[in-house]
Image (cartoon, rainbow, N blue to C red; front, side, top):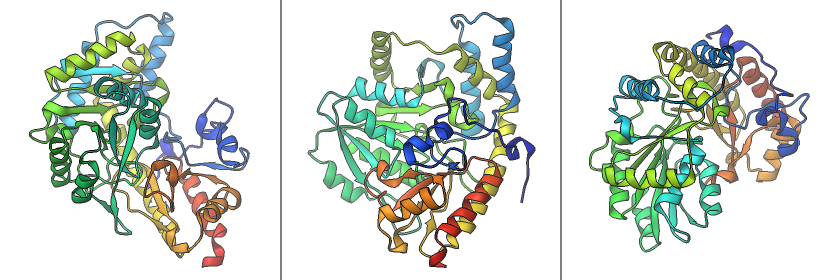
Length: 394
């Protein structure tokens, strides 16, 4: 099994105002001194040195002022998307938001009105529904089909559900969080056709697009034909390089009409980017950053195999095979236990904080989500604790 000192190193994040480690006792009752934090989707690894150097250069200079001349930043985005994803991005289409939850909120604000419906394909990232509801819009949950191993689309059922519903927008998670699916070209074409049939703005959140395992290929929705007139792309460096605290993301709008509408809302909100986020993103989207991501995925693949082997050895417990992301989606349905019982065992017996599946919407009731982006020793400890907590099933 591969080792890498950059990722094997235990970095104690407790006492650093870290949501993932400092808040797990309040959120889950898992004691901070002996618990394993496997919930919030950030990594327990330092970002690549080029990113740290970019921050240090600003500190060394000593003046933290407004950011001007964003051409290097836009060039870095365009280089990354073309080199890593085969996607040609127009620099004029790029808007920088305060992260992609903010980007989602801006999209909802721009292209829907209070009372309108927004389609989600559940179970899906919980912040989508939170933002939609907070804006006074309605969540329309189109549940993904699950065969016990993988998730798939069900457009016939969704067509019937959305017809006449007042939906104005759909949000796609690609790759999907929490189930780790990498959508095929045929599936993406199906989503695009669904958006056209129901006259929906298609917001594609692709924040996990760099975190794809061997044998899988992410296809940007922007590379699907015939969708530009209603497409909004969302990307970020934050998930890829573990710099979520900079709260920086990109909303990329190919269509001129939609672009003007989004620009107007950005101007009305008085939004401008965080300079640290732009410096970090420019440094990250580089050959050095690319090499670091390649090494990261080798390491995460090892973590994935350790976790899946150990969890799947517990009778009635199944880790859905990951194609992308570092978030393992674990199904406890076949244990026959009610949700409060398997959750109690994970939190109180195993002392692990993991996301509750119900927060991801319909279809998440028998699941918990575990973050594997942590040193392998933590993953091994989690497996050992889980096997002990469910030892009576062995």
